[in-house]
Amino acid sequence: MYGNGQPRGGVARREQPDDSRAVTLVLDASAVLAFAGGSMHVHEPVLIADESNEDVAVPVAFLLEAVRRDPGIDLHELLHHPRVIVVTPDRTDDDLLLDWTLYYTGREDLAAAAVVSYRHERCSVLTGEPDADAIGGRRPRWVIPIGSW
Amino acid sequence: MALEDVLTMVDGARLPGMAQDEDRRSAEWAEIHERHLGERERVAAISDQEWAAERDNEVRLVREWAATRRRSAA
Image (tube, rainbow over all chains, first blue to last red; front, top):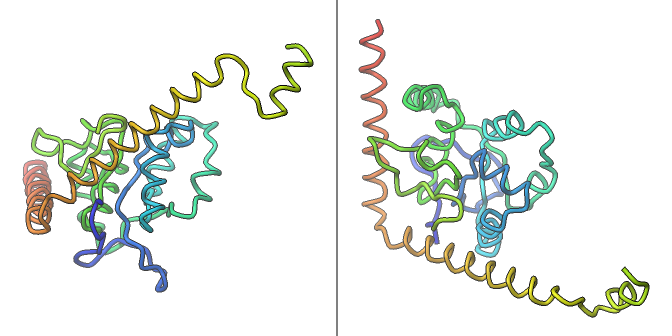
């Protein structure tokens, strides 16, 4: 499994007090588009998360980016999936988000994924653009390319 | 498509080629499933300490890079 998904530090995470499920996977914009398109490479990890009683997070920034790329995208299934939650980084992480956004040359969506996954232990990011998430010239281990694991 | 073919489909039988398509998709799905389980095992094999240290180092790198960038821009 990806891990226990417990949050660290002062945390960007869900606020529901009765929600103890771990977030172990973040879908980025490319994964959102692939999910909406019916890709098995995205549906399957979401299904496995469901079977493992884990949650899958989609930062709002990625929803916006997905819609920007494909204004006709159908997000109904994704947004009504019982294991998919839409998240935003916590306000306490504004500075961190800003630094990551700067590092990723203005890509606030990538920054949000980095921050959200950082705040949930063993949380990976599923993406069709793994090179965009490189840090120090290499792809972090929490970045999982769609269809190539 | 002939009415007989349609009725065959409604009855649950599969037209020629459908079985092959389903087998191929099933095999592909199984492969994806196995690959994803393997990825989860790969991540699980990393110790908590190593994972946290790696992520903390990345954050430190990014924050130092951003601070340097701001100083040079000021």
